[in-house]
Length: 580
Image 1 (cartoon, rainbow, N blue to C red):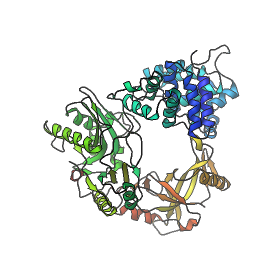
Image 2 (cartoon, rainbow, N blue to C red):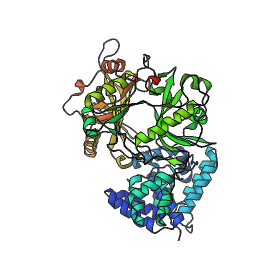
Image 3 (cartoon, helix red, strand yellow):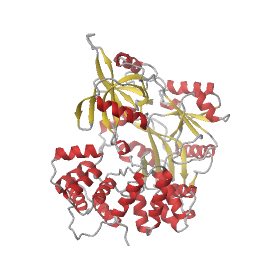
Image 4 (cartoon, helix red, strand yellow):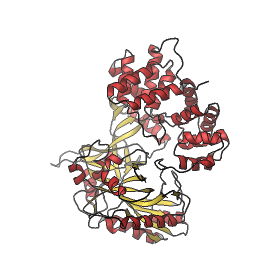
């Protein structure tokens, strides 16, 4: 019997309600075990909030606005009331479920239950059409077929890629392993080769995990580095071993796949970004053979590293103008190779992978070269083993206006998607700022019922030296425990002075210590500056709001040599002083 969307929804609701990964894993395993191969693929894929396999070159192209528009055409609901419902529900899917419960389903009483196959067919239709009206029509038809609130909720959740069950990919991998009695390492290995967990699940069912082989254009998760606070911490993690130190480039982590007639560039989210970087595609097209490279796309102009904000201007654009390409050029810098001409290198040590990468550089150098920079650039490295050597290498990276250091065990194999002691990172550290919370916003997912996103401000005396006022400089939502968020939620609800949808304007009372990586100029905030990657280090219950930092302190940090977000000073070292 075909698996129904209602059954999938009930299982997903149960998974969301369960504490702990093991219980979620067991529940999913019981569900997966009951399905045939086709529904197993769909269920695994949908459980990850994916309409299509990760390696498929198809996207729904359906935004939250399209889904909301379709919902409003189905139900007699005022647009303002609907927006408020989405805010209080925390998401579109749960708002849709409420409307079905409130007004009744749009489907006829004798309509058949939606199956996972029906959902997949609708997704194929959505991916095959262009234009907002066509997509809204198909979306409306799909949602009109939902007979129950939970069907409706999960149809929306999967369309928008946001299930919020707490079953992250690692839990689903473990569930697949438990379902078919496979070792989790076998699942990881097969997914590394095949790319899609839904396909791995079918291989596991038929005891064919060993048949999985790596395929080009099946992007794999990137190997990750574990953050270290200080050089002493990093040296302790290295435990007496010598590591390779590379400069941590401030760009976009990218994975380049090349075959004889095709090139694809994937980001950390496994999204394609080829169109945003045609010059990288051009360079890769000139290098012979098949390969997969791991590296960073960095903003570069006249051989000099540019602030990350320069490269951001190119992301998400459908068309790149000649002026944009001229004013904001970019280059790909490789630091690892995972595959070359039919051979995968995941399981060989980094020092051996480096030799393969350097051989590819030599091969590319034998071909017609670019006048402005080498055909294939790779990072340089040095061997270090002590905290003092780490400090010196870190200082050199900062002098080159790079973000920090990545420390790599030369004997490490490539482990996709995992952090461990094999790769470590130390990023640029700037002084923290004590800031005053001015607004608190409802979070999303598990935090949709609490105020977890905070806009913060510093004091500005004004140009005339008049009375100080608070001016916003950023927003943060990470760094606090659930307990701290619950405590702040209770407090902010007591001191709310105005409500703007999901945003509570609060009486200035709470001081947060904010850490960040860079300060940049910005017109987004009243303070004229923005913090890159802000996170909450701690709540300063010991400080009064009068003790918070001044805008002059932000300006001081912005102009410091340690701030890589400065745009008013050209760096002396060039990018290729650190590359070869």
